Length: 323
Image (cartoon, rainbow, N blue to C red):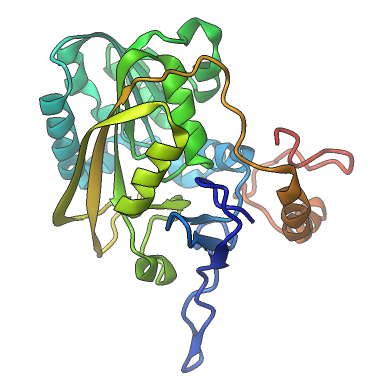
């Protein structure tokens, strides 16, 4: 499988399949069960392959994300990290923007301060419960992820803020390309990601929804290889922060991580819909790994729906039809 950033085939398995005194230390991704790979060329680490529809299915059906009491208690473990993030971005972004897009994963209920630096605030959240919260509690235009590809939004945003997103969506180069398409020329992209060393990945010290694991080196490679942006600010805060890295109610981990805060300028904007970052020669490998999971799913031997009725995968459906 090729690297999702630099497309190098020089990748290796990060999985630490060790048994120590009868205990399995770590086998695969703790949330999605797929293998984890590292790239020797750009040092990026990621889950090998998770289809975007699988992630969409997770965020829209997981019982942990649909509690009516989710929003208020959820904010508590995230408030400090979000406050620090918001203060940094508000201090380093222009004091007046026409349009800002705040794209979050369970954090958009904390986007209110950005009203102070823009005329129009647009919000997109991977978790539907937060879209419902925003519609009633924040004066903003709420859009879903699919609408971000609509032609009417191309080149219309002064600033895009990605909060808790880049480590959770597949194909990070495509994420930056989509933002370049939505931003005006010279518009700004601001995001924050945890720095997760390989030993933490092997030990499972990350949120169960995180699928991308960055070093400062791999972040710089992502920006250079994607090609649209010039770096305005990269701030790798050397002080580890308590990391509520999961979106769900059990979102507090005991470990701490360093975070990198990045602001980029859209100097070479894209206007076409970015292609998916997967090559045809990866498909055979992916299908061989997906086939057993599809067999279990087809025969009702597993469920991701907590007992809910879910549409079954038909025998003629292409599980990678978008790619």
